[in-house]
Length: 240
Image (cartoon, rainbow, N blue to C red; front, side, top):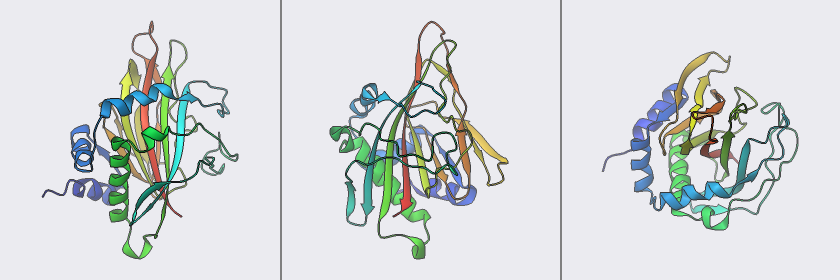
């Protein structure tokens, strides 16, 4: 059997990040049990407005959930706040942010389970044996960034940043009537390492949060007469 994770793991180990094209990511997710992508993607229509934006913006919608990943499997934790220190998020950090929870049916959806299982396999592989924790703390964010004429959407309003975790996956779910949204990667001195744009559903970015910074440029509507949006699933793993 072909080891579909091997080239992804090799790129991250070498460069600190990987741009995974949709076809490659879909192969990995299909092997992990992906099903009903359409039903999964439709749940982004149910996200509530992020009311914790220190820039006053109302262009971001989200839901949030936490999981525990061990050798025995991946289970959801009780709902809890998302917290980042201001060292990692100078715009919105420093407070507990209570977001609406990921819907129960989406937390157990085969697309979610396939994504989490794939992350677990990949991040275990990328972590030295003597540094692998018995338990990973996993956070899952459903994001929708909205854009309208004269009102751009900012996927990373905090700018180029790290998340204060060990590993990050950003999986594109959908793009509707938007331009730009370029992902930029930089080293720890914030010198550019590369850039790419997630354009197709299942395009993905994987980053080693201990080695690189990442950020995404603002999005604007292609057709100014219609709103646009960018939907992503962000999964982070850190040692518990």
